[in-house]
Image (tube, rainbow, N blue to C red; front, side):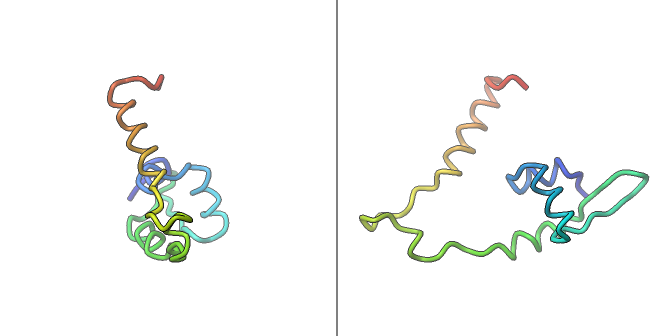
Length: 88
């Protein structure tokens, strides 16, 4: 069982996005001892249901592979966090 913030970190999403998915019924919420939790299996099923990008969107206009900007951003953020450069 994961809390909403833990699941958000796992999915690389904002907690508000998970709250919206819960309201929309896309992600079931469990209650235990007055606390809200998400089942890991429900999160895995949500990840499996993601629609892949169309093939035409995977390449640039010149035919090169599309750069993974999100991976580069996450890598940069994690490097900064490990060095304590973010003020959290």
